[in-house]
Structure formats: structure tokens, C-alpha cells
Length: 264
View (cartoon, rainbow, N blue to C red):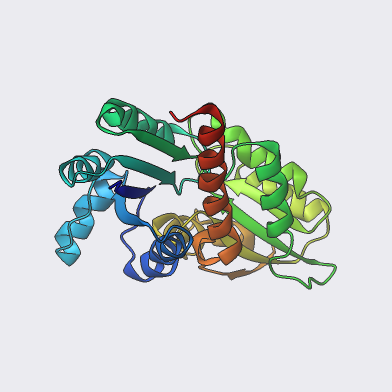
């Protein structure tokens, strides 16, 4: 009898509350959508895994460790879903780890990150435009994306462009568009009040420290210095059922695609 494992991979977070509200909530949504698969968890960040072990005494697998457990458990079908938002460095590491062990399975199906094709960008930007509504004429929502050194950094600028005219803006903490660029746009558009929110799966380290802290270089502090009132919303994208559903749709789409092509 066929046994199916569903490996859900994310960067991870050291913040237990947001982990529960985002990663665990998304895993539960997958359990409902794929009742015949056993769900396994892996985090790609070695630092996050190490700190959770140190602070909580909780062991979380890397993708390699999770795959070893799945193989040892005798599963012949492997579904993998990345909860990364863009197909950047971390996602490609997951792909490589899975490719290495693909020979152990009759069938392997990998769901893409949140932003993969044009339809994903359309669905995500449409969803983001609803957040914080209704907005006054001088009010806006500014999302903080992570950013990456990989060419996928262009995802943030593309979303920023697609959000244009909706009083919603997208910056990135580690690449482009940066906070100073977004501040210049907000001022040019006559924005006086901003709701800051992470465009990340979780409201973790970046959200607490780089976005919403009182540190002089945080986005909140820089906006305040520019004369803009700020309210920070520490809510990760993984909390929203609409985003959870987009991930589920990605895996379902890949399942249909590989069935059509006769498997992987």
C-alpha cells in the first residue's frame, strides 16, 4: 500500500507565538487539504534550528534530516511544499536536497514558493491591496519584505510596482527597494500615517528588530524621523488563510501537472 509523506519546509523562526500562528497554522491547513499524507516539518535556517534547541529544548529537522526520516519510514510518495515567498537561495537548497534523495521514491512532487509565475503575483498583489482597508487619503500600508542577494530580489520591486496607486507599498530590508526609497515615495504621495507590516511568512526577528523596534535604523524609527506616524502590525503572511491557500494550490497544481506528464 502506498504511503505518502508531505514535507513542509520554511526558513523557520525563533519566536514561538508567530511559529504557532503562521507555520503551524499553515501545516494544519495542509493536513486538511491532504488528509492521506503524513506531514513532516523542516526549517532551512541552521541558526534558527540551533537557537530553538538551545532556548526551548525543541529539535527541528533540516530538510536533509527530515528526508532521512521519511526514507527510513518507508514512504514511497513524497510531496514537498516550500513556504518560502520567493524562489531564492533557500528554496534552491531545498530543491537540491530533494533531488539528491529522489531515487528513494516512486513519485516526488515539489510545490513552488508563493511568488513563482505571473498569476501568483496577480493573486498576491490583489490580496495585499485589501489589507488595512479602508484607508484615509493620507494613510498607507508599507510591507517589509526580506530581500535576497539572489536575482529573485526583483520580486519585491515587481510587487511594489503592481501595488502602485493602491496606497500599499513594498520595500525590502536586505535588497531593493530599500526604506529610504519608500519614504521618498510616501512623502511624494502625501502620506502622513503608515501601517507597517512584514511581507514574510512569520513576524520574527526582522519584524521585531528591523521593522518595529525603537533602534535608530529600524524602519519604524526612520519613518518617524521623516515625519510619518507609524503603527506596526506584527502579523506574518502565514496567518492569513488566503496565503495558506495559495501554497496549497501550488502543490495541487504540481500534482496535476506531474500526473499529466506521467510522474517525475
